[in-house]
Image (cartoon, rainbow over all chains, first blue to last red):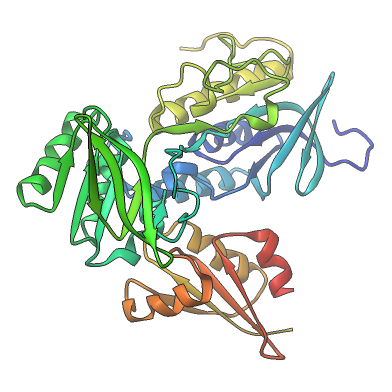
Length: 318
Length: 82
């Protein structure tokens, strides 16, 4: 199977180790397909830094994101998946083999699955970069504990912003939730949010943009925004930003077909415009950005990779 | 040579177990300071790291010099504990 070369070779290399990647790895390794994963952050991806997950099937009372991530990793490793901590920086299509440049050297594989997911987007306002990790944060489970009995601003109106604002109430004295238009979070989360609004712990400011994060003496002191055309200010000790996701497709930007958002396009077999390079999860054009969807796509991609490696499609079995 | 290692963590931090796992795999002992259980030590972590985040890993060498690694940063952590 392996070429006689100094570059380590595998049947499949999976870029990323989030839910899509780990789900794929469970399937490939159970089929004895030699599988190596590369992860530059934490296995489990964004799921690992999500406080609580209520909509992943099989957990009637919900599950901590970190626990779900750990279990996915354990399951993949149980069947032989190996997770290398490092970053893939370039993909080379060498015909039957794909060569990956990584921070751990070069690796080759017959098939590659890109499941790099996305990272939390920045707002892109003055003060955001200057106060990063010293008043501006993107991970509530990581950094919330530093704001016990302090005032916080949370920016965003989707599921992540509402979920993490609720999580942060265990630390903060009060939270101002700045929503650019209206809240887009699920009905269940909005219902949960209402309890904190009613108690006065969270105040929601609809139709409010975040224009600047201001600080003095090295610390964030307020957020300046616009509401109904008027300037508004919110005194705060810290800002947590959840305004959407940026796809991690930069390393293949010049080779794969991307949409206008940077998401990678694929055919019905989850194969990209490069034969033998597949995608799954949040990185995919048309993805629904849910952990359950990512896990499903990972499994599908693994089966498509198996067909590709074997050179023929498998009949559907009842 | 490493004299001692202290890791500042929180209970919900996903990157903190990664640092502990890495050090454990290397056979390196460490003291863990959980800031949820010891909030009075948050200022100490901030003073060492300059950031309101965890994990913060403080590596003290035999000559008492210190290296501080913020986050799960293998590129910095690996040489610090070598």
